[in-house]
Amino acid sequence: MSTARTTTDRPSAANVGAAGGGRAQPISLASASPRRAQLMALMGWSFEVCSADIDESPLPGETPMSLVRRLAQAKAVQLSSSTTGPLIVAADTVVVVEGQILGKPADRGEAAEMLARLRGREHHVITAIAVIVRDNGRTLTDVCETPVLMRDYSEEEAQAYVQSDAPLDKAGGYGIQDDGFSPVAVDAMHGCYANVMGLPLCHLTRTVRRLGWQPSVDIPEACRQHTHYPCTVFPEILEEPG
Image (cartoon, rainbow, N blue to C red):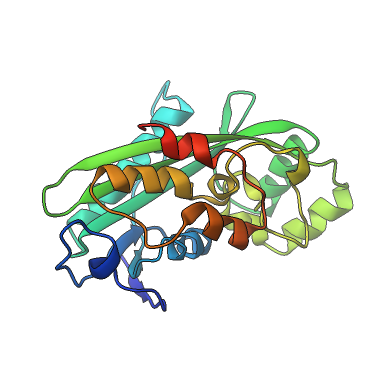
């Protein structure tokens, strides 16, 4: 397992997040994804980025929601034994089209196939988060699902995107935030933009609140400024018990 500390200009988690305070260590984020690190930084906490090495293969008959919950929890549990952060956060994301799970493409050929299959159609992005409190071992999970309509991009656009290798580290072979390609019909989307990037911030917020933690910033506003997406679903997410 490789670990790299992320430096932010935010206050530390000890000062702004934990009920009772008194902790100096950064939160541990079990992900090597730069998109998740960017989103995690919006929570206002000091954190370290750690990659979890687990088998992400689906079990026979496993549903997409069960898969992402299991993998997110497995990542968090693995990290809890090798880091010292007071809070461990993990996530796992899949793309689902016609009931089939699309993970990260193995190569350019598979990325091209995924993009051809998704073009002009709706699919669903499902992300699970798992959070562990080190002090008491309490663990909570949550799942976010967002319907996403892809625009009818040309084959030439898709091929140029594939040749850039940008799809290779992304579930479904695309990134909603990739402005050069802009594969998603964002104007037609109703749901969590951050979820499609890989870390649903409002779901994470309501989960950590249940564990006695509190972000130091206005998360819906911070997310809007980062994504430039006029989210309309955050009130219902933050009001739900989870």
